[in-house]
Length: 93
Image (tube, rainbow, N blue to C red; front, side, top):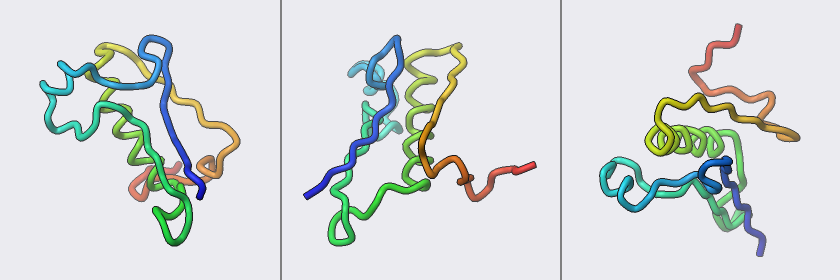
């Protein structure tokens, strides 16, 4: 069996996450951590795709805005098929 793990890291936090106290203060945030784990395969969780990445990125931004307020975040993606993908409602100019 194969698993895929996707995680966001940053210098101040390491793994992007909320403290237990922060998480209790924001019950609308479903998980303290941004980690996504898939059991890869058609008979399991499926395959990692741009829709899952976009959902994880939104979760990461929600957490970072709480954990590191007044901070500008820059995300880098490399060697990924996500380079040519956009959200359904993205403005492509």
